[in-house]
Figure 1 (cartoon, rainbow, N blue to C red):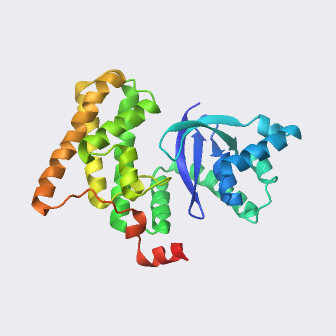
Figure 2: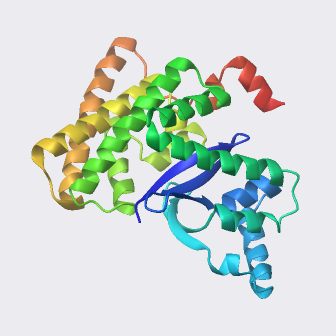
Figure 3: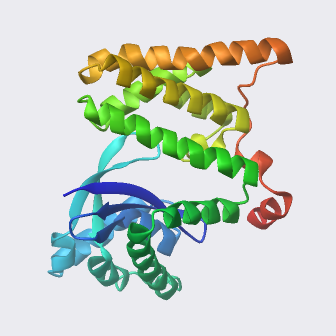
Length: 280
């Protein structure tokens, strides 16, 4: 099964999803859905208790749930319970929530949009732009972020081609690239910005995104030229790709007289009217 992971937004809450190309079917992270519907401070525990109850009742939906590796809040890939649309409808029926019906409608819309996007890939980009606008990002920032997604995809495709394993090896190479140009690992960078579950790239400034794009694009081109094999050989490519962005950063900072690595996060530069809405 060819699986493509994607983050979906329901009322500004992130839901991890996986698209199965072969069966043209969405799988949704059950714990994310539980968090949206219950607003529980511990959706993992809520799902654990609910799952045990449903199993005791002989609920086949829970028994038949799949488990996929999805990216957790700390950036690591972890096995997570997922359910397709039909399974999730049945689970939702067991959760008392005023958001149940709106969420079902949203799920149907997500499924419909994916079919449309398969026919016209530009629609997926359009949807990402709409989602970022809804969260309050500026047009300039959104343009940079969309480009960074494209560059990242090209890099991971290159890693896959050269035998790098998705998951821990992807994360390790990302850390090498990030540390080389920024001085931080991904975890350290998030800590510097005061982030917890938020996505680091969604909280970079325009300059930070620009340097990250340069680093990853450079790593991609160097990999194509050198044709390394496996994770071990890709580590040198990752470091060299990051060093290209490091040189650009050093040159720019020498002209500016200040560091461009910023502790600012998204909430610091959202559009004023959107920021007010999020605080209300």
